Length: 106
Image (cartoon, rainbow, N blue to C red; front, side):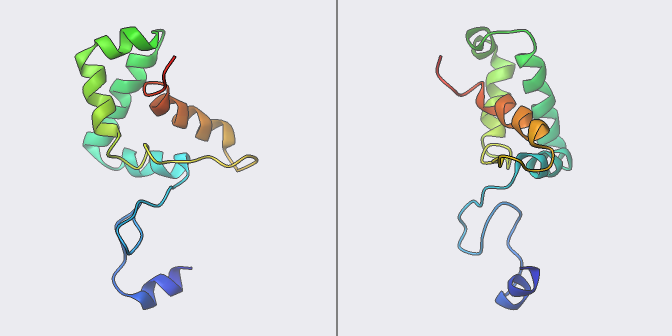
């Protein structure tokens, strides 16, 4: 796979294919990409603190939590996916729901 990409031209940024579309990455990998970027990792920490012991309405009423969620919607975490039976499936699902719990209705 890497060989094909290297023949096709310059590498695409992580999370995008050569046409500019976002390619879903698994949430464990997305978490690693986020951790390597200071603004993403700090917003993700904020969001996790927002989610700790609060319901959705309380979280969305907090401006800092809203901002963290908005910023993370532009990160690889927002489009991440988990596959049933994958390695680290539970960790993947925890990461996925930490982002999507704030976005889901009800």
